[in-house]
Image (cartoon, rainbow, N blue to C red; front, side, top):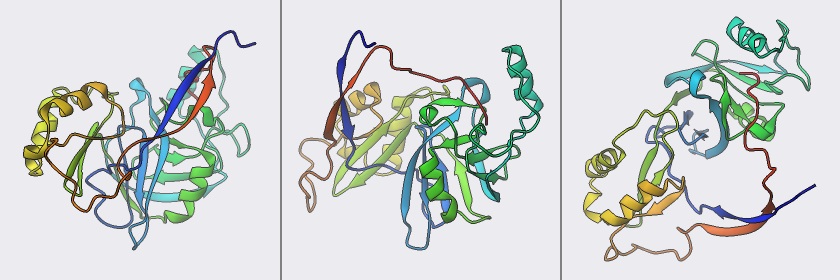
Length: 262
């Protein structure tokens, strides 16, 4: 029975900033913000999906890799380290979990060149978007269903950690700032200024707006341009988050889930 209720405002960004590595077709990047962004074909179709990544003590590794194998209806073979962890928690994991509703890998798995790591579905979609895995990348069932056929064996990709992304459109400068969830990027102000300077955009930026964007870490593109910098060929309404709806929530809503699977 609900005992309290509040309204939550949902913002839908009208644009996004992609990692700098997505410059050629058939590349994929996993960012620190918990998204997978894929340039999937010769037309440079850009797909972006929410994902779960490794928790603090099982961090998703960074670096270049590629898809080495694709499996429909995979079995899950828990490594000894995960079975030992489960035993300490009073749970017993089988040596092999067959395909089916109890399999935490879901219906599809993309095996990577990083041994032991995969991009896969899940039987617990409530955990997508959280830092709850043992290092693998977990996707919603409907999203991995869409990504799987677009990702042939040999597809190159890279796990990147970009808590601050920077872009420019029509003469305006945007930054997208996320929480430093793994604590790997201290000195974020210096990092942002250095990136803006390298891209030749620092002179267009309002310092107060940049400071506010870095402090708030909203996770969506924020316009940090000086007020006297005007849009080039402006498209009204194209660059502002829009309120979609307000939903009811309550203080009993689950905020995290138990780690299970890869």
